[in-house]
Length: 94
Image (cartoon, rainbow, N blue to C red; front, top):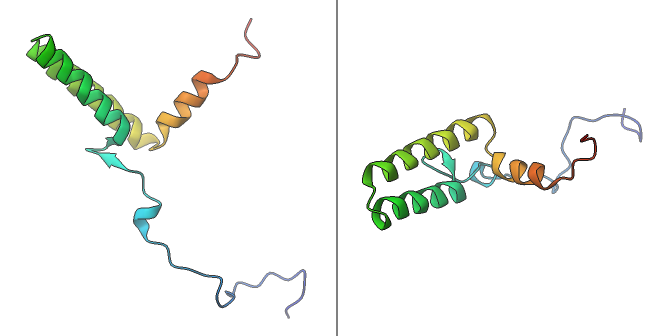
């Protein structure tokens, strides 16, 4: 029976479009969000090349990228969520 209050599991012709899986997947570079991977690589390159601290630059990149990959595995959208969290006012702070 089809009526205004019935739930029909069928699809209405013309209102269903196939979506490619890549449109819903996050954009990652080496498992880290793209923007964070670029910033991390730039800072590590500046430390390694500009300051001539090769070991420190590589260590900075490895630690930063590992943390970004770990966070992206938990939530691929952690960067926008973190930025929103840091911008919120602290209403209940003492």
